[in-house]
Length: 396
Ligand SMILES: [Fe+2]
Image 1 (cartoon, rainbow, N blue to C red):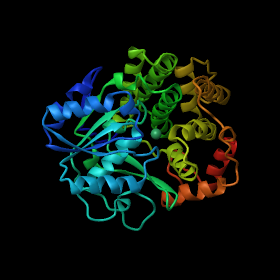
Image 2 (tube, protein in one colour; image 1 turned 120 degrees about the vertical axis):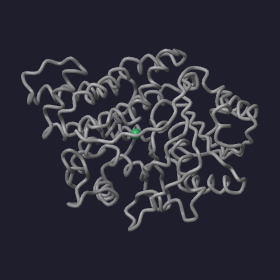
Image 3 (tube, rainbow, N blue to C red; image 1 turned 120 degrees about the horizontal axis):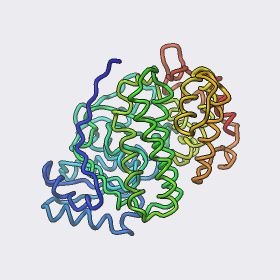
């Protein structure tokens, strides 16, 4: 194993942490661009509490509201412009993954004269990789993406029907205030898809790694088992603070980086394929994952059987006849799909009214945005266009 690990984000975890927002933000500046989404935080009081904490600490607030799910580059441009016009010296995200992702890119875009779309990897000749950004604070109101404690961001361009990502060191938030109380009003379906998203973040690394990484495997299995134990409790009773707490921590741990450190993950094929599909249909990220992941698992199990057997044994307690017991591997995947269904996630495109007409286009687009030097999608078993089509067809 060879790896480097860095995560400089200060994590402030626990119910009630929101009241400390001003205390932390005032360490970084006096004029905050506060980025928000569709308005639920205004209805439930979170926004007012955040603003009060900032004002009490002497921080002025300039708002960029209305960041959409699948955040768009137009919102990033608008937020960066608001930050520049008002001389903002920091960015604070109060919302879900979309708000946090958009905020991070705004923080870099505010210090960059070019078009921020140049920073998002989308098959262009020359990607602009920023080295500086305004200090970022994240206050997640949904346990799902793990964006609060990492340096990645996913952005859509509706004009070109592209959705892709950037990932660079200057996007690490300075502070992540993780207050599980803020997630108690999240509806059942969004809670379920948050659980699906966080599990997919660890399955990508788990099934695409080099193997022989026992600590990383058990970290990943710990996150999956915790999400499967507490996720259904948080869905059954949104006011269950203990369940909300465990799910929120699982979502962050899934992508802080140490679960993946040393695992040698060769790609995130399920996310890459999902990004293309949701660029065409504007579906919720985790709905796409919930549909594509089990189908991809059945594909990947053909060449990485022993890892899927381990998954079946350790996650579902299924008996295996040996490390290459394909029947056991497939039973584990079936059980995983049943779990997703049991919490209310969709697992077939037809349930969304999406037919197979554009499958070839999704596969081509995925490979156009992301491919290795042989033109294959990066993964433990690199995927050709035909492989991606096979996975998507099986998910219809
Ligand atoms: Fe995700």
